[in-house]
Length: 277
Length: 134
Image (tube, rainbow over all chains, first blue to last red; front, side, top):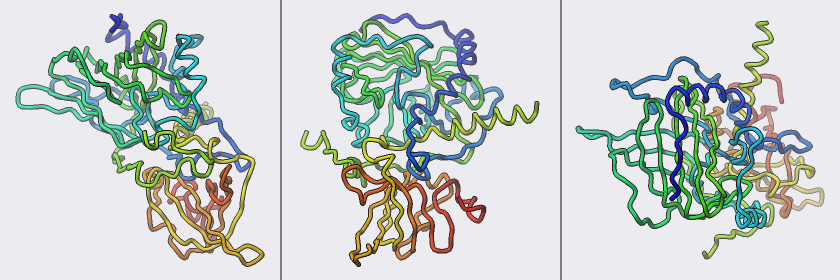
């Protein structure tokens, strides 16, 4: 694991996040450029009209910690292209082998399309929720519940433990977390190499190490600044930033069992690349 | 100035509302240039993930009946727009426009669904029904 330099914390991060907020809103749709002769090609009924994002200060728990759990969030990661989260003018530092792997990938082989998990830091058009768990002594875990896709949870250990020295690779890896002032930091290793960062097929290896820094800069905006370090796929660590928005009060996570009736591929004549594997 | 601000705010809302591309990549399945318009009777509605599907018997000019398989958004997206599993039922007469599957032309991505009384379903929100037809 490469040692990572953490970006400046607290106030500096918040100022940076606020400065980035407007352009990041503009990039949130991520890939909505497809069109047909009838106009939009999004699945009919998919576009949910949402109220304006609430502003004002973020709420806090009685102990002063930023409250991440009082609503469901949309966004906060890449969908179409992780490079959209880079600073202007930057490019992904792909190693030649990773670039070749990416070029060889077919769009329809994206595991996500076949109801496999999205990994980190990819997101979906569906909400997620932070759920802190406490005992009578201390915080123990933060769970992130994802509606889709697929219906998933992430488990972040908040009890001060370290990563085990050896891990069996998994889709969401092994996560430890802590708060640095108003920022929830999630450090994750132990990923498998199966998920794609985005629809472009941006790859990674089992050496992937992510550090997410979630900062609720206003009531309705949550900035996720993710440092990605993977010496198997990238020549250096890099950071991408994405915004999540608070869904209106009353919106809740709903059931989304992707495997129930996934007919992806049939209309286009594509076979499931994971069948029998 | 107020009007200008309104335009800017509306733009932001619309951008945000476009964050929902759904489960798949459209172009790998459907042809944005190959459209269809069919009328027939709904035979089945599957309120399932990742996409709601409904099936329509369409009588061709030669009398042959073909069952079309048509795709909508996810149940959760439709529900957030006010639609539910009772919105469209087997037996309803519908006219559907959309894009055809690249490999299977009778599989389609619906873009408009109109029932016999003229109501437009699944476009926009359920609250909008009764307004101007889209």
